[in-house]
Image (cartoon, rainbow over all chains, first blue to last red):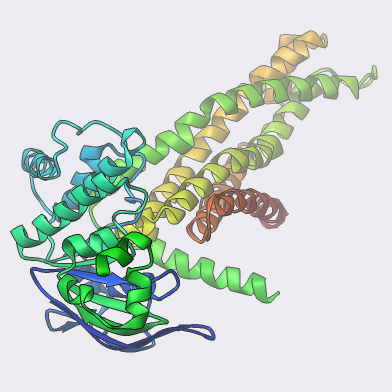
Length: 248
Length: 246
């Protein structure tokens, strides 16, 4: 479980996050939704420690991330799996080397043990036998799946995904969404997905926070979202004609 | 001025992160070997070709400027030797390598920055500056002196060939090469090269590591890396020459 309490963040005069509090629950896919410039990417970057907060608390299962020393923060980060928008795979490494990399850095496993784990993760994301391909040889969906495999190889307690569906066709996007949800349930981890894809929201939104102008305007799940009367939320979620009809 | 101080501050903060014990020695060794290949071995052909032709040209131009019966021909060997050892191999070649290796380092790290690969390292709990930059600095400072010694040797061969084409006999040329040779010049050249290698790798890494924006930022960081490294090489060439030879 990750709890954020009274988070404040400004970049110069731009007050990006204003008194943001939310609880990301364990074993659920927690979604942060909001329009461009709403502050959701800043929030996820704060959660992974890439931005420092001005005020507030971030608790990873009760541990205050900002109160512990850098060395301990690094150890805590090893428990976080991160799926970046573009995958962020290392260009000069093969699929196998990319996935094996965290194991090589942080464990004393033998080459055979590491390979066994890599193959298990590849199988989990339905990419068996793709070990020797380079990132440049992968499609968008395959890149995301390799990135998921790398994110789960260390059996993380927290999985953070930054717009996992961007640039993917709707069918592949649903495959990635379902994969993220299955992994969340399978390993009972705290998953946070940052998205503005409404298909994802309807597919996997178990615990949703809607951010608008740097503030949390609404929280709930996908069923509650359908019946919400929050104007700003409805304007955002049901922006297209198709979704408006669905709402009606 | 404020911008320069800001760059200096960020550079030293980055270097503080760079100079730390590697998280895993086995991975570090692998990275080091990879970097040696990238920055060193892959530059050998460039060094060979440039040194050979510059050596030949230096010999021919020296002969051309010494068309006097009172000047012995072996001076072509002396002048070629000293030009190559004192200035061309350590300084001019470092400037050329700043273009090749420096831009490569800046664009590689810059691309990793804009595609969030550096963020991915940080999130894994890895000191990204040390992981990416330290092997490059060690590889360049270790390998560049070998490249410079190779350049001196090949440059001499080029000078000999150039001298032959300008009617300087092999005997005269070899006599000139050995004439009042001061071996400290080699040490001086190597000291300069180590400094230049450090400048090229760390300054280029700095610009790549702090690249911001899209692909244009990568190109910009690469250009800034080459320009800044080249200027610093020339400044430090003067400082080191004054300090060591005066």
